[in-house]
Length: 94
Image (cartoon, rainbow, N blue to C red):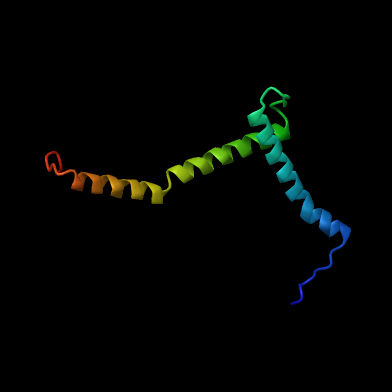
């Protein structure tokens, strides 16, 4: 089985890798800042500070979306309804 190969020059490689490397470094830095908040200080008016806030907000949003996804809420509602059905007491059910 042969592997497909692509030829790129150094400039193209830099253009491909630079955004990826920057994102990885920023995410790693954000993790360090969250786990070790007393290590260093970033000025609030800098682009790096703004990037750190965006990463933090994105992580919070993703966690919230996972917890409160339509699927999880639907499953919880069905489980609660089944629990009430199996409780044996029909009072209070409208």
